Length: 493
Image 1 (cartoon, rainbow, N blue to C red):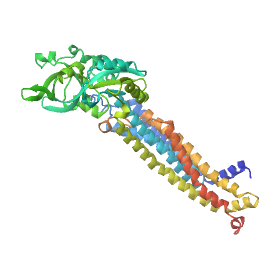
Image 2 (spheres, rainbow, N blue to C red):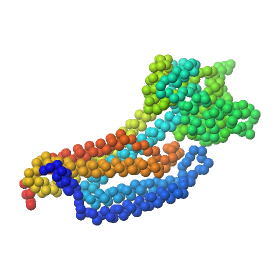
Image 3 (cartoon, rainbow, N blue to C red):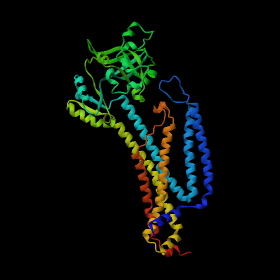
Image 4 (cartoon, helix red, strand yellow):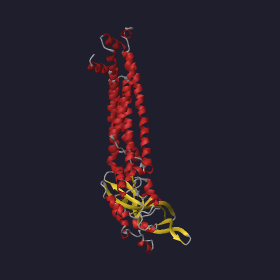
């Protein structure tokens, strides 16, 4: 028996031409659902997305009715596609074959969508961290004063792959406006060089980084006294600006440093007023609620650290090369300095995300594992039902290996059809979500819609795992059919 004939026999075993009448009914149901979903999305596209709070600073979350209609439209289109696909399966294949193919389909499409969404969250988090923090941070160990930072900065700028470097001074202080105090991280930056390293320039609202160096550009609150004109400027995170302190451009806030001033009896709190220039929106609650920027010189004067910095932020040409650039900077500066990439500084966070993604992949792979058990049962039932055909093939001279290859081919047909359709639908679903988006509650997730990032390596791993499970599922039924004797198949004929 030739190989081509073996694949032909395997294909004929899976087909059930008597079930074609069900295809039209499933197609009609799916078509109606698809039309409803498309009409929903088109209606929302034409009428826009009214905001729940038109005065919210960075919130773009639509009202609940719009959210539910949007989600319903996207889900409706996806369900319609699945209904038409299932109807097509039941029209062309036997009942158990169609169920097995659909199991492989789900075991492939679901992990692709889930892993792509998790990769989207990971990429979104990395982008936000990189926007507020640098790719590489240079510090001095043992809490030594970092005073020679101008020379170190020029040395860093000469390292290949470095596109910018800026000093910063960081300390934990208290801020208050009226009776609303809050603990924050005060960060002094150099307005001239910070824009080349941080994405703060694109994140600021109602102000710019240059306002830290030019306080005269910031309006003065008409209700404040004359001393407000001479107050230095500060840029606050949006949560701190709008919800904690409830201030506006020109408002005065007081910074309190518990141990920054020396009095007759030792350390005592230091207090200084700053004028709010505006706010920034980084997209991360931790930054927007706890971070504030002032000019480096003002931070040094307020913290009583003249000429000193905490470290130097470095921007790499490519963030993926940050570990290599950090190693190169460390080699140039020598053992007196410590260079850490943004991945090292956030290693625990990204390790947790990686472990979560692995756990999600393992859990969703059980769908494909259940589908492989379905393939085993389908092929065993097929070997029993087709005992007469197997006996005739053996009586005509087919070898045990040929019969075994027929049933392996049947399992591969099931696996390949479910795999290809699952990959196509998974990728299409990701593109659909990416194009139209699924809105999320921004007060919970701090993003407006579900992020999606597809990676070829993850899709290939999912596809390879599903195909491997399908191939393993064919081994036992194929050997069972191959060991069948012609006399057993023809005994009751």
